[in-house]
Length: 136
Ligand SMILES: [Zn+2]
Image (cartoon, rainbow, N blue to C red):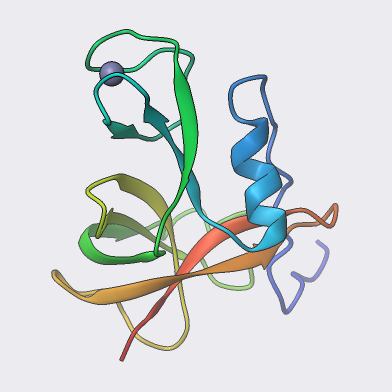
């Protein structure tokens, strides 16, 4: 059996027509979501139509990257593939009201209400995915 790498070798994201902008922004170090032109609703994950009014008129909105942990879990068995230690999976409510599933990086374990800030982790193919770190 091969030894696991010391740092995560995250798989590359698989961009789709409606999500390419999101992954391109991650590579630039920006967290963006779609915003509906007619009703101003922000949403994630990316999709073709506004979930509120079904309009296809949308723009991109850059977010602060700051949010609050709502929930979390950690895979124990089997250990996560290609990670030295399974990462914390967290549900973050961003300050702009959008929720995002991601990972918590760093030494701290997640807690309900923990303040976090986005960072970007490199993937095995040189792309980037959003991860979060404690603001404390
Ligand atoms: Zn809308």
